[in-house]
Image 1: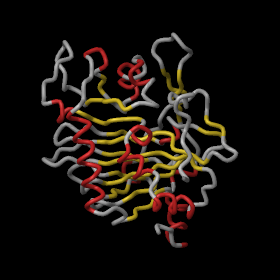
Image 2: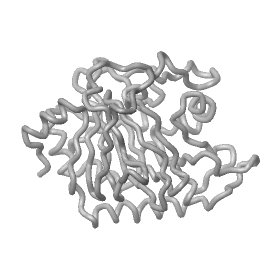
Image 3: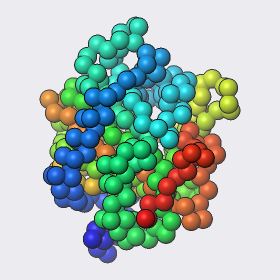
Image 4: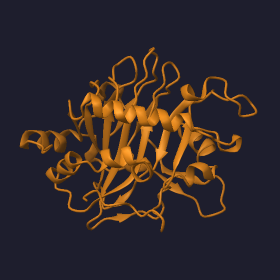
Length: 291
């Protein structure tokens, strides 16, 4: 079972992230990649739903906050694309399978392969060793980080988008399905940056408003020298505190950097903000992790 040692738990509490190499086998990684290949092969996204994904604030508000395709994706499996892959009419300029930025946000709920990974006994054991009493799964994503096209992810805190009261109740679980290197865009963290609160929040606008989201506060300028690169091998798992500052650079290599990631929330004594862009629905409430 994947229980954390006391030294690992202490390191996570100090740094706000923790690398667990070899958490998943090559066969388990291959099964996820094979399944996502099948999902991509069946992809059929109407022209008006072809949304380019970005982590830059102005582009987020323009490309995502103004489209219902993104705002209503919390309980669905939907496709989001890299910048510059469409012509002015929405037609693909590159092969569709090479244009995808990510698939989100409910693979854990609607696909049996990713449901089994998310709720696997070793993930449950990991959550228990972190002291989570009533963890629920709030979202999941498959990230492609395409060769040459995979864009940078600017410095951010996950709790800016998945806000709770009190803070400190959101945990990211990031699974490397391919080697993550300096060349293909591995994660970078500022160790210890999870203790200073949240600098900005993305909030959902009232129904019928445009754009559909806005930001409260601003992301401060970060000292690049504080970031620590975190290259990992295929099969590694990275625990990510909801308030730790992290980023990834553009993929300039010939190799993709695929990952499956999902977020947990400790539901005991926690209020999920009604202003978050992602909301549970009657059809899909946040499912308990423990089964």
